[in-house]
Length: 94
Image (cartoon, rainbow, N blue to C red; front, side, top):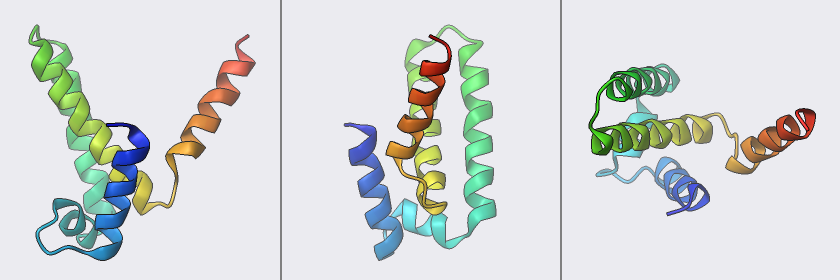
């Protein structure tokens, strides 16, 4: 799955508020809760990276990316805008 596709799914679930959707329930709890989840997931990534279990590293990184995409969607920041910023940075370092 691409980041764009996942972002699109997240956006749809956040906007349409499906009752059984984790994304919709998290977004409904507000910006502070979404930000808190990103922080929690970031800490879990750091802890996983100190270990040796590659599957756990991948799982925790996936959780962080997923929650970052929810936060980006909440803030109305597209994946394309992130790509554009990364492109600008790569051009500066050349």
